[in-house]
Image (cartoon, rainbow, N blue to C red):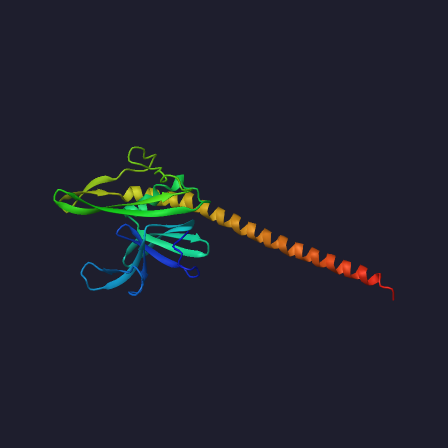
Amino acid sequence: MGLETGGGQKTYLNISNGKVAVRCEESTDGAVKCSNKDGTKHWFEKRYPSVSGRLTGATKRKTEWGTDLCLDIEDGGEIFQLQMGWNSSYAKGFLKCMPNIDVAKKITFSPWMKEITEGGKTKKKTALYLKQDGQDNIAWYWAKDAMNGCPDMVQIKVKGEMTWDDTEQMEYLEAHLNDTFLPKLKALSVAATNSTAKSEDRRERDAEFMQDMNNTSQEEDEGNLPF
């Protein structure tokens, strides 16, 4: 059930050290002090292992700080937006699952991070796992051994060093997001809105019927009075 923040306004979340994080005051229980790379800015955040709810939107957003994938999540009156770097392993963890996601069901989003040492260098390995119905993690539809038409990353030389380039892969995933996945979300939202409208219309008609019945009953009672 979400993060149990109390509902109401949208709560903006990011992913920090493999946890779902929300900005908070220093006095907040469990607050963690954070700093930017050069130590010139500081803030506090509270971290959670996951966030869950029904996905209501997914957008690519460009800002002066970079490009993010923003996931809108709703659960029991709580509204969240989970933000992560567009080219991050977290974003790919979501994007590569898209065909296997049932958009009508709640999703639990659980980030993960582990520091590993390779060649004398320490780096962070990250991932985002999705679950539905309490089952195992949703499998990637586009996996390393089964890309299903999605382009592989390619090695290119940048400033004399070889690196992996995911440009074509991310373009492919973005196209699927916009052309296939988001229309499913929109169709579900429209169906939910129509269902709510029908329910409200039925309640109004039922109320009018009961009022007519009460008026009729009252008229009949008055007609039977002995004067």
